Image (cartoon, rainbow, N blue to C red):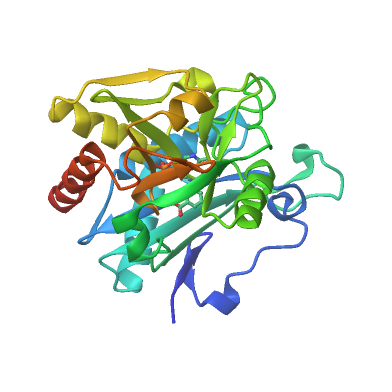
Length: 285
Ligand code: PXG
């Protein structure tokens, strides 16, 4: 049975409960991170902690622990569960308050850490690649709420995920209000065109994924030219290769976008090269 870190204590899952008055529950008011542990080490821990604190700052949520204390808490949770390869969910909620929306009524923010097994796509998906669709649900405009904030408010993405489910595919691409490609519901997106690796720029309105930046670094090391820019659906449809990146999913090849076959319908050479580089890299850091 797994042990949960909850507000400074290690507790059994039955004791790990959140108040129904917590605005994390009532309004999705809070922030989170999803992290991976490989071979006993938390992958890019500092990047995740930095993003968590930036997300919290953006929504005026004061995390009641220092970044160092949170890092220690993650290690404690992993040790208590005797984990070496795991998926870690770190959540900060606004805390208990009144029934109205005001965050000013809320008490101390709640913090919990769940560490467990990894929910990846089936092995076949990595070998054969997957089909995705474009969702009609647009990504929330950066002017409304920055997509860089990893908040507990995923309804926008969840509506796009419904579209994927209804279409019988695993993921959906979300466009911004101008029609440019942003990302999938829980993954960033890349294409390869004429040997160049291209991904939507920050300005497109995306979450700056940790895996996205690792892939860009690995591409630079492999001397694969990279570019961050606006992409349209046309760019996806006519790409030589396409793949998604995320902490849970890692690198997933995409071979079909809105019924347009990508390349020859098989995971491409650069996708496979970067996947190998990624697997080698997570073993060494
Ligand atoms: N875009 C969005 C909207 C996301 O939610 C990513 C990109 C990828 O970012 P990272 O830093 O993980 O490379 C995310 C990731 C999971 C999981 O299990 C990931 C997210 C949310 C829920 C689950 O990988 N967000």
